[in-house]
Image (cartoon, rainbow, N blue to C red; front, top):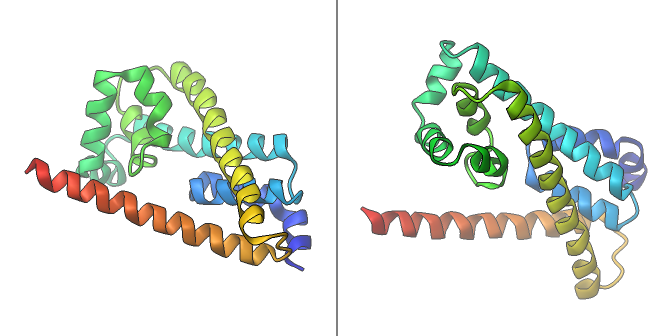
Length: 188
């Protein structure tokens, strides 16, 4: 039953997940590609489109609604200040890389929208970066699918694959957060 739902709504769900959640859904999309439940190139294209469109919307919000209370509230966040500072040092590199930087994915396009970077330039960099991001995380999921089957055999339950993937991703996220907090506390 789950496999038929994924076969029917998989690419649409991947699009929404890439737009609103991010890496976790795209990695799971890669696992689905490995399981032959989603086609490889369309999965990358759909994940890239979801990410691209979400970031374009956030950029537009920063560009057109700088004085709106949502943007003003975002400007008060430390992540917003970090995003602007990183953008000012390396505008093109940061615009390309922000979606790969933990904690900066949502706030960065809003912050970039408040800068002088042209919309055309953001669109171009955002498109290339979204494609690279989608390919990276689909491939990670695809490779993880191979590793999972090597470690656990030919598992037929997609639910088990998803649960283990989420568990491992969650543990990895906790480790990254712990390391970052330890490094941050040594600076003070």
